[in-house]
Image: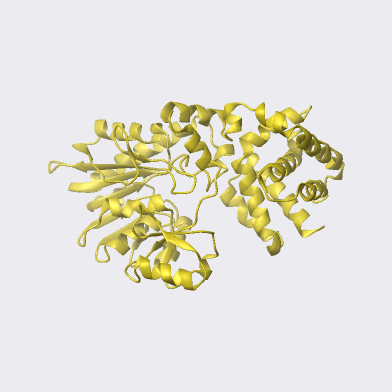
Length: 434
């Protein structure tokens, strides 16, 4: 089987696995290993593109398939969706997209599906304009209907922006370690290496690449000169503004980007990075080692009572909490398939527990920063409202965040198609009687 056919077959199997409830981040490595390295870029482009467009593609499929396919043939449905995606959105000649997608049925071990795949894709070619125009608004925007409805309620003036960001290709953004090199000098090194880049507008340490590259081709990456981190995520460190003598707890720290940034900004500060599992802590250890940063690391579940910390108080606590990831869908497109309408409420319960458990660890006059990569108010303003009602002497702080929309209790940066991700920020503090 040709390598490109294999890439299409494996992409269909991976998309099918996600449809069955598996996480893209969990299954991607194994599938990627089974693909010819020469076709890995095609494989990844097919998978990510198809998942980003999934609600639209399945809307089209529902109009093309007279009889829905059985669950055991979800891989065939995924293959047809991949074919439609190639015909409608990728720079692949139509004849090649059609013939190689049809041929990939052999890679699925389902040669009987050859005629079906061929027929459905040719029907799409003939009727594409009519099919696209028949889609609902949510399907046309490639959003699950429930999420489209949430966006309309929470951000009625920004639905198109949110939808465009959720189906776009995220830029590759770097955080320059300005303890080692200035941003200007690093941009010069990138240019000398033939890597086109420009400074980020909002993040003063940030550099955005014109095209993604392998991290090991970046000047000084191995020596800790830079890290890969989204522009909006980079704002966190500067919003917090750590001081030299601060004791800082990053309570949900993996993979460690924000904790490392805080240590870069305040090398003399004490930084403790905690997370729920030792497996997740390995990512923090790897980052700290590469960046040569002395960050303390501890395994703790912030949703449980933090008895081990009872004697400790912190000047700064960062709660970058688990959430629905609705502000970073383009990086995690399986959100469109895996998330359900009630998930935000489940996350909110976790988020409130984390806030409640962390609050006693804050010293009087200290600052707690609540951050999510969600754009749903149920996980953001509603959680801060809980804190203001239930936490002793809890007050919100004013924050200066470039590009943020001020909400009832915090600040929302919405994702943009060619810029940063969507993050929510809120600052809480307690007076001396806390």
